[in-house]
Image (tube, rainbow, N blue to C red; front, side, top):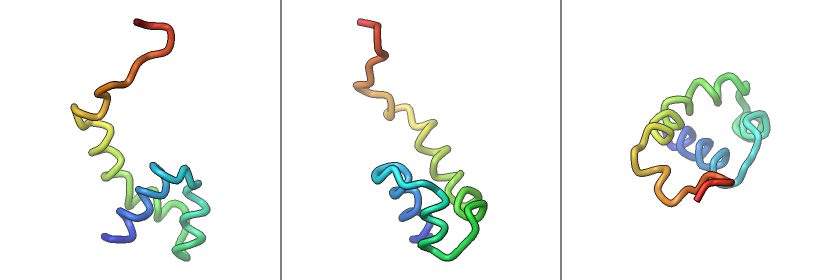
Length: 59
């Protein structure tokens, strides 16, 4: 579980590629995506996430 959270943070905060994270953990890139997909989905559907985000061209 800690590795999943770490991988998710690497993708989100460090902008690391899934393949690079997979290499660091010694697993296939599909393993990374399969295991962090749920974490990413929770974040995407969080109603507080878009707070303060502005769309370019809109006021």
